[in-house]
Length: 137
Ligand SMILES: [Zn+2]
Picture: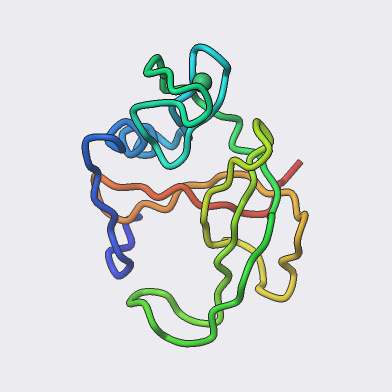
């Protein structure tokens, strides 16, 4: 069910494959063919070795809460406080972190190091946003 009350991100040239994968409920990022570095946010060159040989690669969607904050003010339309804004570090690479809400979890239960997995929030027909929830297994 699409939730049109929240902000709907726009795809651009460098992020279109990210949003196309998310629409299929897959988490994909560019991966350097030379040294295996995942690149986020998506860019045309590897920040480590400057290679432009990147391939969009599906990730496991598994990670852990690296850090988080609890939003108490109603600052963004569609988001009912209190809610969590977290940095989730993906298991594929140290330092590979996505910003996310933590869904399907009471706010007081979120903790640093909590194992999480990707889930997808359908915000329109075109845009599904990768988000994270507590890992089920
Ligand atoms: Zn590289």
